[in-house]
Length: 349
Ligand SMILES: NC(=O)C1=CN([C@@H]2O[C@H](COP(=O)(O)OP(=O)(O)OC[C@H]3O[C@@H](n4cnc5c(N)ncnc54)[C@H](O)[C@@H]3O)[C@@H](O)[C@H]2O)C=CC1
Ligand SMILES: CC(C)CCC[C@@H](C)[C@H]1CC[C@H]2C3=C(CC[C@]12C)[C@@]1(C)CCC(=O)C[C@@H]1CC3
Picture 1 (cartoon, rainbow, N blue to C red):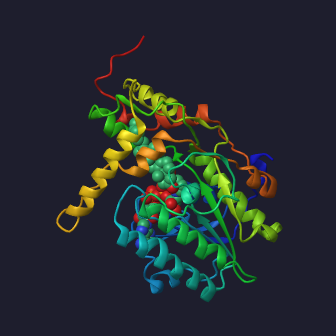
Picture 2: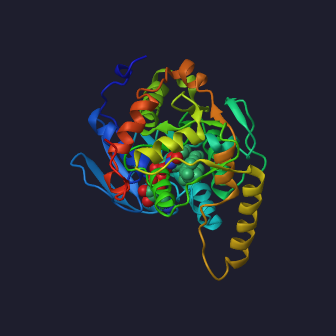
Picture 3: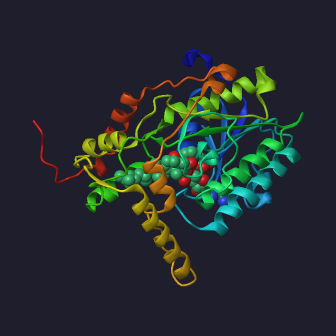
């Protein structure tokens, strides 16, 4: 199905986390389709003539109730930074906050709730190839972000009912203009000379998903939920459907930013063990000092294992297929971040 499958609509929708990376792109798309859009977020990061902004904390139900009158559909894409390691904040926002979102939706008679979940809810550090939605939740998730995303998704899907239809979309490795995680972290590591090494053999395939495809899936799922209510209560993987070698993808980003591609191999288990030691150290000093290491068992595992997923279920049940190919997506992303390009790179003629 083409992008034409998305129809203009004027319903009132609320985007929780609408000032963030995914949220803002979604808001812009919804506005362009004619929806009446409200944003609920801790912060306001942009202005838009068609959007009403509500600043608040989703951990406070009263804050949420103030913006939910007459709302048809809620998109919940708020999260603390996935790269943080603050367990308390993850539990408070992703778990307790999501319970507030559900309570407020029921109280205000909201009809649909679309959760931005994550494909990582089934990932515990071992290879996943063509993983589909029948995979069980990770028994031992590698970090508290993933642990609380699992709890959040379970809460949302089990709240699915006649009055409130819920759905969870599971994108993976989202990138694109204004991404606050992947590109900035990669550029920061490169500028510090820390991207010379490949963790493991460099033959692990992964999914990276362009932001427009993630947004497309959200709008499509919300619209299809009205026509095919039987899709409610389900989780769907959302990817670019073009698995790529992790280190090829990183090399393309690095070269595009004007840095050399990594070339020296380091043994996977050795680096994983190092990351484990770093985590123990971070835990020991945590009462005195907050450290946010880039080298964690989760990032090492993500860099050294296969993790790619099937989005056959989203394709067959609500006609999802990516609208921007990986090649274009990488190009557009690199062009959107002139400030991250290496200022000392030699010009190639
Ligand atoms: N970035 C990625 O690669 C992936 C992200 N996801 C999911 O996509 C969703 C969106 O993530 P991003 O846009 O990348 O994150 P982001 O950090 O850019 O945006 C999150 C937004 O939530 C807001 N927020 C945080 N705590 C809040 C609270 N207590 N009350 C109100 N607002 C609050 C933040 O202010 C921010 O604007 C999240 O659910 C995340 O788990 C899933 C897979 C991959
Ligand atoms: C090793 C370096 C050259 C590059 C480091 C890149 C990493 C910062 C990113 C690679 C895979 C990314 C990823 C996420 C965050 C950024 C990376 C670790 C998530 C954890 C974001 C939230 C999710 O739901 C899952 C993502 C998986 C992939």
